[in-house]
Figure 1: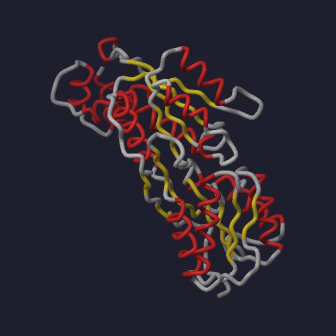
Figure 2: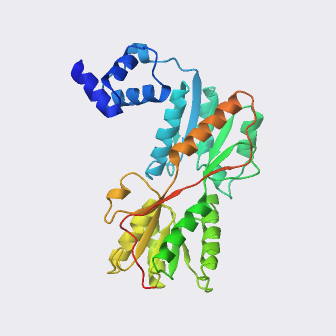
Figure 3: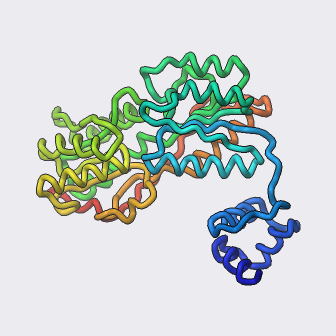
Length: 335
């Protein structure tokens, strides 16, 4: 038992006495510390004592895109943790090309009488999608919260990363390194975050006197293959730095550079977006913009809980500031 307590304490970064208090259900432990100990139990493969299992107060649907992009599992983990702390049981619905649609998932969730639904980068972020589906949900009395992809026509709380701030930080960083030909590799134009990034990119180039009338944006898919294709276009037009709409696209941009006999960052600088798991260990470690996932998810769950209580949180979009994380994929440009 002592070895087990020590292992759990080390994993949770607390004392063995704190672990003992949690395992024995004693008072004097904060909710955050208690959650850290429970998480340590799970990570180390220990079964939680039955006395620590709290009864769920209800179900909450969590609808996210496919999980091949590492940022979405990060959102899932953070939202599920917040919901669990509030004693709700999350019901995860993940989409994939050709798989179950968002609408079908919503039907299933309603059949299970969920207390609310959180949508992460769902159809609400698609300017071509019919928004009537969300109005019907609201009319049925189901609380919803939407993450990343604001649309003023939907009567619900929105929380998002500040896309404009992300682009500003990326452009400022590259200009400070002496780059004058900066390109943007981005996803499909129909998505709200894409449009916001493209608009902010044009404004940032103008602010630095780099809007020379040439095309500096290449649109593809938010995948490594999409990033490689978009980056190839930008490299063909002699760009020395490329800002990407996702970390996966950035990894594709690095591949494109090497396929063209160029070195990263000596010949071409690359900036990603998300700060996904493991990009710090890429070759080279990726300079990227970190989405404040934990803060966004906490705000999303808080807004959902307020909706459940019959309150009406502000419909003004909550924007969260991202952070530029400088690593090894950017370096001084030709000036």
